[in-house]
Length: 285
Image (tube, rainbow, N blue to C red):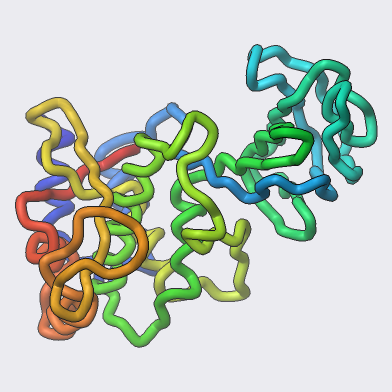
C-alpha cells in the first residue's frame, strides 16, 4: 500500500524546480532507504564481428566464463592488451585455452573500460563468433539513457517535457532489457545511439531530467496487480502517428504537442497520460 501511495504522490508532482534538488533525495529521505538489489541494467551490443579490439580495464577486475559462471582470475591492477580470437580460445595478452567467451567485471562500478577508444562503465561480455570478436556492455539503465538521449534534446524544451521524454525513454529501455532481441544482448548500440560514458563539465538539461525522474517508468498495471508491465514506448510523428525505425507503442500526441502542453503549465504526469492513455507511473527500483 505504501508503494502505491508513493506512486500516486509522485504522479501528481511537478518536475519543474525539483531537478537541481534531486527529487529522489527528498523522497528516499522520507520513505526509507534504497533497495539493496542492484539497479536495473541493459545489455548493449557495442562491438560486432571484429577481427580484434584493443581492450583496457583501468582498475581491479575479475574474469569469469559466462557460459559456466566459473571464476577464472582476479587482477589487482589494470590491463591494456589486444584482444583476439584464436582457434584454441580467446587471447587478451594471456591466452584462455578452450574458452571462447569472457566476462570482464570491474570491482568498482566507477572503473572505466575502454574498447577501441570508447569508454564504458559496467561489465563487458566478450564472445568469439566464428573467429571474430563481439562485445556486449551490461550497463546501468540510467547511464544508458544519459548516453542515448544527450545529443537528441537541448535545453530549449521545458523541464516537464524533458521529464516526460525521459520517463518514456526509460519505459522503452526497460521493456527492451526485459525482452531482449536474443539471449546475449537487448539492443544494438549503433541503432539506438549509445556512446558509452557521457561526462560533461555541466550536466545537460536532459540529464537533469533523467536524474529527477530516475527509476520511473510507465506501466499498464501496477502495485495492486502485483506486476509491472512496461512497453516499447515511442513518440509519434507530428500527427501522433508512427515514426522512426523501431517498432513500438506510439504516443497519441507528438513531441511538439508534449512541449506545448509543458509550456501551458501541464506537468510530466499529465503529458504522459495524454500521450499514452491507460498507463501510470511506477518505480522499477
